[in-house]
Image 1: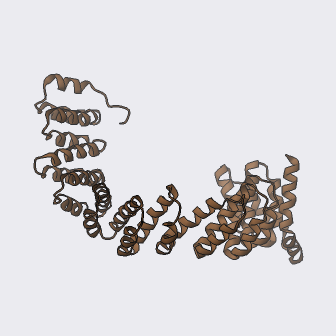
Image 2 (image 1 turned 120 degrees about the vertical axis):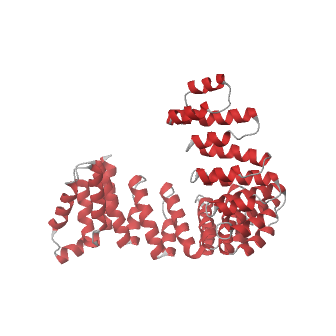
Amino acid sequence: MRTILCFMLFAVMSIFLAAATFAAETNIPANDLAVRIKNACAEKKIDDRLNALANLAKTLSLSELPQAIKAADDLKQLREQVVFKQSVLKRSGELAPAETFSRIAELPEGVTKLETLRSVVPAYARKDVRAAATAVTKMKPGRSRNEAVQMIAETWAKNDAKTAIAWVNELSDGFPKDAALRNIYFIWVHADPAAASSVVQNLPPGDVKNALLMNVAGDWAAQNPSDAVKWAQALPSQSEKELALANVAESWADTQPLDAAEFALKLSPLELKQRSVRAVLERWATQDPQQAWAWITKVSDESLQTAGIARILNVFVPVSPESSACWVEQLSAGAVRESAIGSYTEAVRLWNPGAGARIALKTANPELRQQRVEQCFVLWLAWDPGSAKRWLKETDFPEDVKSHWLSEKPSDEF
């Protein structure tokens, strides 16, 4: 263990050889940094102490880095040593990323090397991505190299995804090419979904492609819904087309919910239409639940009404149990209303079980009515026994049923 620590210290110290020479030439007071470290270590709480050391490292100049590295090994506790040394190395990566990377790359595999690379590699890539990419490929195989390749790919993709893809494809076997490409694709689809769409649609079928199609559809629809729709409709695979169209509709609803709802209503097959309408209404309900309610209650398809109303109630009931209860009560008698009562009671019982019991009482089916009321009443009784008992006394449930409910205890979910 001591041998490894000595090797790490030797490798890290070599990073700052030039900086140490500069410090000696400029006669910077050596005790200034020592005092700052001492003050940071004077914090009594360990979290405050570690934060103080990390924050101190962020203020270091290039000339102070060698002394800081040496001071890290002199700290009393291992956690102080690790936090301060890693923070100093990260600071070094900001000030001199190329030099810092070349030395860190020679360290043995371990948490210090990996955690520091996670800071230094992106800084190096932002400064000179091609040089950083070349340096990373020269690292010894291992976890650090694998993560460094992916970090280069991610950083490069933010500015030039196509070139980043070309670089990854040129890597030899043994590099994490698939993982790096996934990172690039997921960054690219958010940055420029239109440009990424043609590449994504030609990927091999699978979960990664499906996730990317969803991202392209969602982000493109947020920018230009009509173009996103045209792209989705042109996809050759029916399952991928439906996946993309559903996500276009859902994302579209964030900005133009009525247009998105009308679009979803015209989709086919039926399963795609139902899925899209539900998704649109859920997004719409977070913006204007009353408008969403007014629209879905005018749709002629009862199955769409039932599912859509449930989505709206799930969003709006916890926010406004009273208003949503009025909406449910105003529905015409029938299957849609009965289903809405069930959706309302399920959504409200953990927030306002008394409101849930009152609406559940309006259920037409006697057996279902008793079941729904019981689910709400048991919790109501636990929270506000006086009000619950007075309400139950006025209902027409049989006395044995009332007695049973009064003896029940809420389950663990409450």
